[in-house]
Length: 396
Image (cartoon, rainbow, N blue to C red; front, side):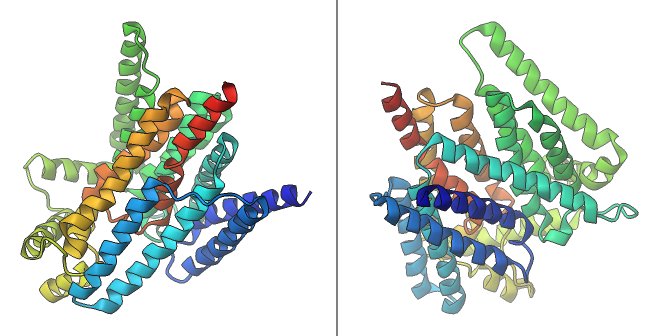
């Protein structure tokens, strides 16, 4: 009875915590609510482990992530401002504890599916909330009331991936309108990164259903092409989508293909990357201290902010080796996911592969090494292969 009650409490707190990542994390004065819920959740998870006398799991992903924290700690000795660096290290250690807690709790397909559904439900609730609070009399990017619209768009992208998985693999057709609503809100955030992430990840999921038969693979290619064409048609032909995201995509394409753009944010961020690269070349081994890019930028242009590029942020902060170690953790997880794709549904393992590759791909446009949601995704993805082995042993 105690076990049942504890599991219910854990599920409830886990749902509220995932929801808080969407609603509170990016609001300046409300993120503390998310932190408080997370602290309570961690407490419940470890009470559960003690009650069941479970052996503590510390996998290869956590070992590499710990090395990343160590490199970040070493960077303090080379930092411009050690206080800023230490504060960021505290955040990374907190994320490490959170990831360790999830890794030791999620040990079955049922628990994994529940967590994935919490991301779907949270994305849907957030989308409805954004619709209800938006002033439709002015055409502006949706979701700013929750904080950074790009961050909101990306986390909604995670919801869309898991939603698509349940539709594709478990035939949860009731999730189709949920996916549609989440996708519309991603468009309306005006986040180019989120749109590219959405297309990239869902195409990978579609390809996860490929088979040896040529006919089926041709169908997959056609389905992918149709999916892309529908999105392109929507953002360029639906007036509200075009005004919010379509024009921004045009500006990005003009910049990428060398025609240039007058959009200030693109040009500014490109300049920030260029400056970061020059700073990295001056201190390539240990950097200027984790989170210290903002101080270099402040000295250069008078604006204190992050680089908007995960790779540059890490290269400048902790140098080449620290950056390699951070991305090595991603590669380890992806490798394990790929190896267990025979024991579990391909669309399940490819859902996590798609999200991780999507974030790696979008490293050029966002800083995420200290984000809670992708840290949770990496941690639970790191134990999917363990669940796969368990499933195989159960069948045998």
